[in-house]
Length: 466
Ligand code: FRU
Picture: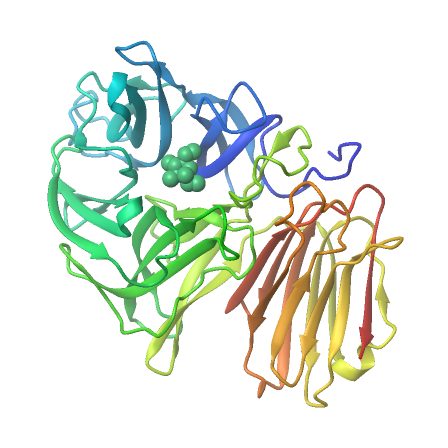
């Protein structure tokens, strides 16, 4: 439902009210996809971190459920916050938390974030478990289960591999991801470390490690996702590494430069689903559509923050390297327009969409090397142009004049992706949803996810050539 400001998304999940950040504990169980997430039950800015909860039967329509894991008092009467983590289905009851033979036990592995008297902050990994499909939870009475006596040590992501539990967790300030192993989710043994490469300008958060099929082949490779946040750099987002994992150690392919998962400013903390049904061959991730630089200041519309469309991942071989390709999962029935056009024929075209919540799929023939601009949310004096520069093959999204941009000086910005200028065709799959744009380029080889606040009232889509 639209709010008076028109910013509330129609087909992206956001809770009814309050603050959200990272997706947590993405897990499928018995017909339900669970989306837990960083949530402040008491307000619409960051604080009192707990795990909110929503479920879906199809990854398209979500039902909000009561808060799953709430912050709790520590021994010194300060609060332990429930930071990011993951959920596994302990179908063999390796943890001993469940009745013998019970197959549907869920265990959450989260970062317990606590003030330890005068020592200051501490972060360690802790457990909670649920016998009713995530509706109610108990905290393990021997928490924490993994403690290095560190101030920054967080975001455990646990998965089952070769009959064991594996955890990937980060030391954010060291640019190091550690891999641990456990038989019972309680005792963890360090296997290996990975890091000090790729993007190290910021801290490392929310790691994950999972197998991804290579399109049109029987091959699979492992992908590691890392989120990197900083207050003051122009790029904040996610990077990935592709490589091999032998159960102990992750070995990345040689790579030049940083591989970005999304070239927009607003895609962060994405992690994959655990326990997907066998029929689902491609991993599915969900990200938080926001950026720590201004996350607490974006216009709130009931809630503050939302989640991306779930995205199914595959790999594509390009020369000697593999790149991640992302395919959105979305609700049929959003107003859709599908257009095939020559770049030069875009001049003066307008595509009327009934609302600011739409899907526009464009296949553009580039053989006449024509620059063009498509204004995705044109209204009054506002514009949100997506520009293509034929000479450089650069596609850029400019939100500097997209509506409400004044709430933070780093919000107005232009983001771009480099395409091969030799390409004869450009495919744009554009998902607009009131205050978000997710743009999948060339079948998901590149993605741009950006928040925009164009205000109430329907905008138009208008194209021109330069
Ligand atoms: C990432 C993050 C995590 C942390 C959580 C706290 O956005 O900073 O590292 O667990 O948010 O809300």
